[in-house]
Amino acid sequence: MASYQRLLRFCITSFTIFFCLLSLSSSQKVTLSLYYEALCPYCAEFIVNHLPKIFETGLISSIDLQLVPWGNAVIRPDGTILCQHGEAECALNAIHACAINAYPDVMKHFGYIYCTERLVLENKLEKWADCLEMVGLSRAAVDCYINGYGNQVNPAQRKVR
Image (cartoon, rainbow, N blue to C red):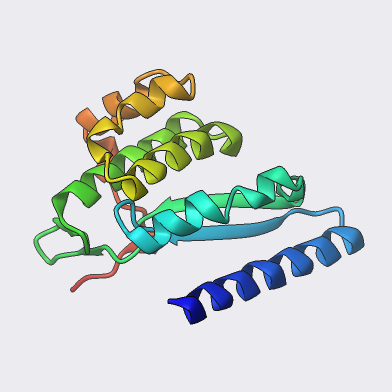
């Protein structure tokens, strides 16, 4: 576990230095896509304990952060989605996708995603809906999920098993 933490710190430090140097040499934003799984403890740990640093340091001004709640999910031949951590993860991935769609500003949807991932780490996932109110967002993401929009798959993400 200690070696995992050292590796994670090294990667974050390396990315931070890379993005700082890049932002000094270019006025364009760097696209950073983070594919994650909503109920993955390692993803939650990264999103809650490390990713906020790009906001705290102002590095976000040089990054086009794209959060993709897909991770290790696959589409079965019958069209259903299989998530590594089960149906609850598929549902929360879809709600995260809906939040990203409803609130395209990363500053808004990241707050919600951060809140739900923190609940994953605290083993309080049943309170996920409270996060919308806690970060000042409407229930648009939940309505999107109920209407099935969050289960539509981007063709670039298709992996059939």
